Image (cartoon, rainbow, N blue to C red):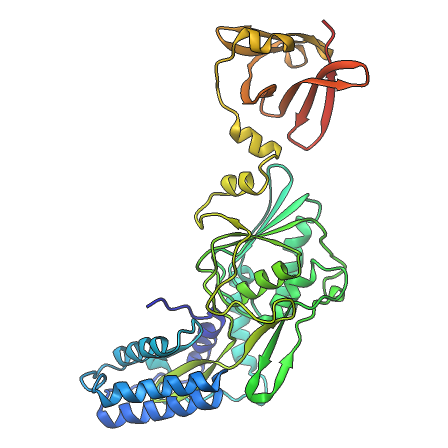
Length: 426
């Protein structure tokens, strides 16, 4: 069974476990303990799960499995937890639903919720700083395309926000931006709104979060005043994979439905329900989805269906492949199309001769060549892209048979995006 657990939730468990003594008494599953855990889990599901009818289905299924003796022979609590997780997913598939056992959590009750825990917050911040707040790349690809990759949506702290802003500020002058979420497993809904805010000059509603048991809705508005004055207006492409889940899907779906981003990649995992820990005692803890997402444009979310990409791409596509697919007519894509292909003299005869700057084009042994005095009379063998269109060197592509006013010549397409005209002189 595929299990996807929010990394922030896992981190919280680890941080809390460091605060308290580890359990020293081994837990062995007995019929009595099994019944207690199932009763406690059932009550927690009925109290907290986002859909009461599905909570009833899960509870009924667990009791049915217990009545059939499915857990009778299980003595190891870890094996028991894995079987319960499997049964919960069988009864009601939900990627955020989880049930775990960890000796570090034995005899541990729920953490106090009425006030912040400075020690726990400090541990989390140290971890996040050591991982650069999950940002792994901010760079500029060929063709002046920005690329930012991050693998989680961390809590919105001053240091985290500073890192996010710096990553996006570096690519602010690019002509397009690729955001890579192919290895992003989610995190904080507040960071989702923070990141989305960089792409809207006006307050824009993206995805809401509805908590049915509290009859509460947190409306998902972007906030352009929270971006330190940085608003990015270029086209945005979000890369996804089947492992993209939770808050990463929240960002991709919200941007897609607001018509602010094009999604490229694979259909995402399909986990839309925010989750929180419920401590059940004896070292068991359930991650129970307590809310659901809602998009005003679709009236639904991506739970179970995933975010459907606008452009299909394999998850392991290289950045070269991504760049060429997203920008099929770009200089970079044309460079990858260029091939050594024999040419017939008659097919290119109209292109031959001398152009401004003394560039001389001629054929030799079924190939097209250019002698360039601007580069010390260096000779280049042109590579074919399409009829009349060739790669000249590492910086220039040329298209023959062009007109500028009454002059005939060719266009120079430079790797930096500039275009110039060279008139044919003889």
